[in-house]
Length: 141
Image 1 (cartoon, rainbow, N blue to C red):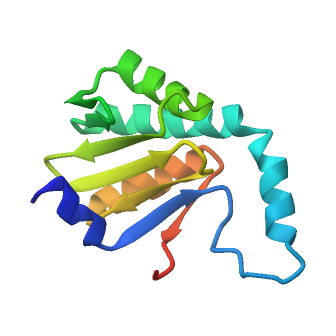
Image 2 (spheres, rainbow, N blue to C red):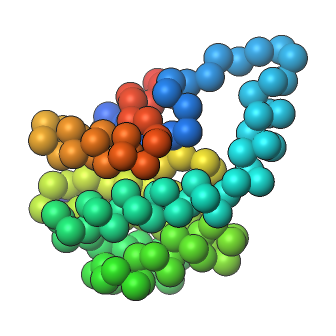
């Protein structure tokens, strides 16, 4: 399966919230998001820990604006740091054997996981939980 096709597959979020926050007219979500944006380094550190643990179990291809290359521990951590700081606008983590794509965008405080099923979905959920984060189905767009 082509990596682009994965964007059309079922998606899950690895998030600081346990489920999608409902829209409120008073803007409280945006106030909370501004608060959590001040903790970006810590949150992205949790993302790095999840991805590093996942890397121990699966091959990962790292995809940025500059192209793709196989992951190694140092490069994976450096690219997440570059995304956190805004030096990169995104990093995609492609697991070719599982046909799973994980996306991380610089301005977001969550990662999106496409096409995770079965044992891999359970593993990602456990890894997210071990870092104090939540794994749940993404809302329909």
